[in-house]
Image (cartoon, rainbow, N blue to C red; front, top):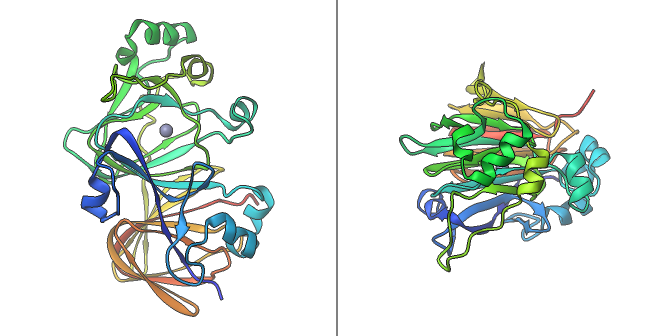
Length: 328
Ligand code: ZN
């Protein structure tokens, strides 16, 4: 019998982190610079583990080895047999993140020991008034112009600053220059990769006077130089359901993400092709499935095995569901 897997995250610390994951979601963080919570993670730099149930304490890789397609799904097992394909995080941007870029699969494979590229999506769980982020350039630039702006310290003048509000969604294909800035709490769905090229860190140093490493040559190599204006926010198309509303956020070859606003209860079903991941953005409720039920609360993340089948979410809550779309 299969069951949903509630995950216990791995926490990361950075100069830009804070304590919101504890104050808002009661996460057991220890550092007051907690930047990331790797909620659903099977990466060498962080493995989240199942919390409770039959597989208590298992990593996703351990369960994948045991359940194979029943967890991963037929399509995912076929296309990504050695690596859980997604990484789901919460980010507390108490201060600004560096201006950065991620390579695509091809570049990462050649230059980062076979790592994956990173295409990612942000859903803004909470934004302070006036919060902004950086999404590409404010005009088309040449490689020379980009490079000299980095070297002369004038990069900010050619960046595209975008206001961000609670409930907004942004899709960031690999090679897009970007930065989350201060005052944002974000759910991030991405390829299972930890490769970041930092191009500018706002001239910042840590408490020991040390600045963080930059990767200017690689950034200049991979960055998409076209203007980002007008392409930033994802248009969220709504579909009325029995007992709630579904919003389609984004679909790319790596992941498909939908937001569900559950008003009473909605009925869903996992196909056998891909596992599903759930992040509870707000509210609480219950997942019932063949053989049992599980409480779900704001800030929690759950993996649904691909072969779970029909399930129902009851309560009043808002959640993000992601899966790997299979090609027909
Ligand atoms: Zn990023």
